[in-house]
Image (cartoon, rainbow, N blue to C red; front, top):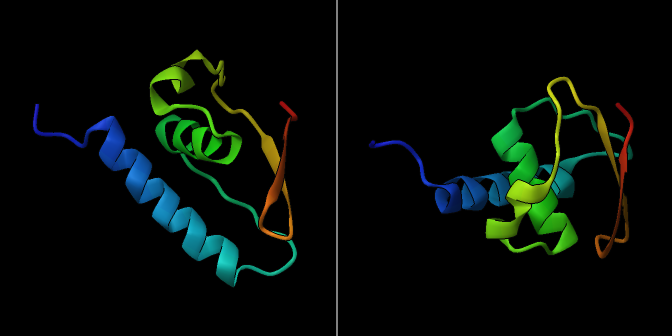
Length: 79
């Protein structure tokens, strides 16, 4: 009942993503849970958060996000 809302999780995830991607080198591995992955994909792909629940993300998924010049994102579901 007193847990983090989806909007709070989204905000926290995006802030962390911005920090990580501005400080990271050429390649980066990120291991996290469904809620963060869902939030980040919604952000990257410009999907409204309330519609991001339509994403089918399986346990143990591997998702590759390619970034070019901080404006273009390509998402590939590997597993």
